[in-house]
Length: 322
Ligand code: ADP
Ligand code: TRP
Image 1 (cartoon, rainbow, N blue to C red):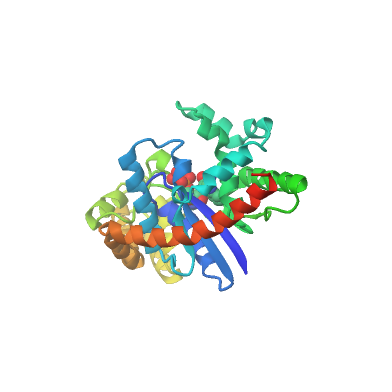
Image 2: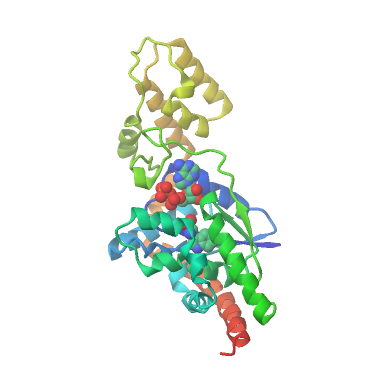
């Protein structure tokens, strides 16, 4: 049995790219019989950039609802808010005192954020140390993350290994599992779908808004009669990620034949999303209208997570003489 752990920042409402690139693959991993999964909402990490309390609450709920709606089993696994297990902050402080300044100053993501953000705060600088605490506090063995998090995982391993060298075996050293982004889901403008590009497809909105969202996908301006090239069309690329082999072939034929407009293709994509995500959309909506239920599901996870956090933190503190 392997303990899998990963964190999900609560930086906004999850979009189709998040679902196909991160949420659904992670849930599949958690369904492997012998895995014990710890998935958490990294709400303390998102405090580095999101300061508005109402936005924070809404984001946490929508991220939690999206994971559960996509099938994450919160009974079998452990699903929690990072901030509700405060031991992580105590461990992060301890680890700060064992993290060389040059290592943190060298982090790509810190350098990148320094260039892009106007609010460059100390939280951004020690972000990787809080991440190391997230992982080491739960004796995680495998950490699935995207390529952009690889360096953070290396820092976690370095911090854990050097602590173990000084004080004897204390931490389990985790292995990263870099999720090969098989597909980059394109956004409505054809660039990578991302909250920061404002080109997302939000599958959890009302039918009417979703249809409008899909109708805004950019295409070329060939007239209705002209045969069209499926491989250069954003609508087709999205359809290909979701449809069955038969559905994809049928749409390809319509493109090549001509007398088939992009409006028709968008309508097909809209109907496919409604069919494919019917259950998820319904559950998401139910959960968002029942914040108490969401709260209950998360707090169950939090009491499970607190037990192990408490025991690992005691192990660490006794090693360093507290
Ligand atoms: P965003 O770019 O919208 O801010 P995040 O950086 O919060 O998204 O990504 C959260 C997770 O979703 C990451 O694991 C990331 O790899 C995945 N992801 C985000 N956008 C896409 C996309 N367009 N295609 C595939 N995976 C994506
Ligand atoms: N930094 C990660 C991201 O932006 C989120 C995260 C926080 C995380 N703590 C973690 C991921 C621990 C894996 C393990 O995607």
